Image (cartoon, rainbow, N blue to C red):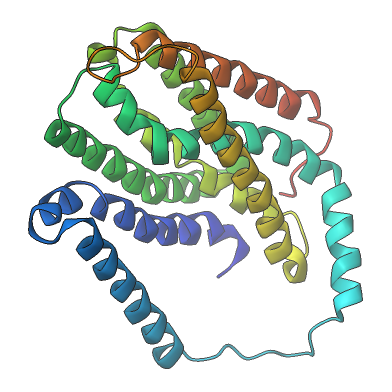
Length: 282
């Protein structure tokens, strides 16, 4: 795809992935009564094998105009990417902010809905469905918004920054509001969190095309380190509080953990803004 349409292409692709997150909510809740967890996991495994087979047998190979660079050259270029001021600027912020977004959305929102908001299992599944759908719409929507604004001269990085600020504001509201009032905000949180696709697009548009894939996957490594730190760290903080008679952690435990994450994210955003001399390529 042309580099200028990268945000739209990425957004639509990630929206397809978001449908998998949607399938992991209410459909799983319904299937559990029929097959149990083992049956659900077997069905998902079969779906993955079928998708892999469809790609392997149905997608034509792309033509390569030149031989790939040597492993040594690729390693040197990767080291250059990791030292690049723009990559350092983006990676620090993305690790904190997107690591938190995906870490919470994929693991801790469900327990928060059950423990802090006091929702029952089916109600939690319903909320997770709408949250996953919000993320899916967000991926496609962010791509469309960035694509339209790019035609007006607005850089993808600018759109990503605006959405990120909205994401942090939404997370702050979830921290300070009573859980039952804050619960619907997770849908907006998921929509705005999908702005991570724009950071990838803005970053790899700033590197030569033959290095763009390594720039994106290097950023992905840092994001997954952030996800691990978020998922594990929230568990450590929440576990400082004793469970109640029903086995639930108190709302204060989640509030404290999420507030600490927000502080780390604001530091990450500050890191990005303070290193603003490293510019994206137009």
